Length: 267
View 1 (cartoon, rainbow, N blue to C red):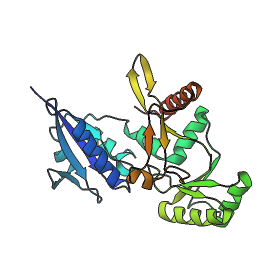
View 2 (view 1 turned 60 degrees about the vertical axis):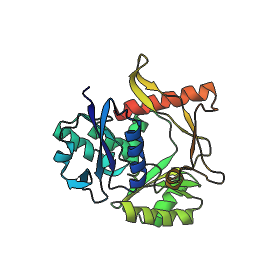
View 3 (view 1 turned 90 degrees about the vertical axis):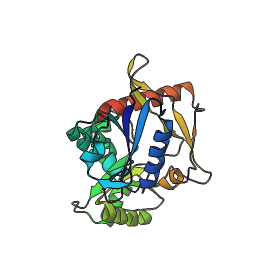
View 4 (view 1 turned 90 degrees about the horizontal axis):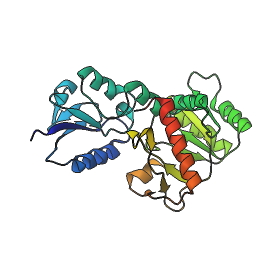
């Protein structure tokens, strides 16, 4: 029996390297050996590709691969970089194309798309190094628009990496300075108290062009205010499925997920 050669891309240059290793390992474990030939393709923290433990260029790593599963978290794995490499190599891959990937990873641009699509979001403001305001003036502008507490977010990280809960305008000024220094941009949103949920979608499933999977309730450790990277890293977040959300809440979450998927042009 001819097996399908599946390249599992994992590792990467982002801060989420450890999570990506776990995701890739889980993918390889899940593929039946009698049907698939899983090949571990590692991208190290410097961006060098590895096959069978040896550094190789991307073209060689992708040779004789039938399809790629992208287990990279954030960075080059989600900003469109790897997608463009795969497109140039002519290797099919699961997931969204380069443009949609980059758009969805960028929280600031994604907010703009969601606003145009009419999706409800927390109030927010974004700043970058080209802004003429200093951090004190930025903090005051935010405070005048919506009061604390706040969520300060890096523009291009996933898995809640770098997100900070800020209670006062004094803390906000310092957080803005740190975020701008580290990333060159910052997104500040109002903190909304409530349950955390995640909804996956599948295209062309069960007779729907975009099918929303049942909403999962993300339960975080007691005392934590929000989902953050350290919780994911130590496996402390519990994804409860089926959730205890009401029927109306589940329907609403599914509608939002489908609308966001379509607005970003994801696949």
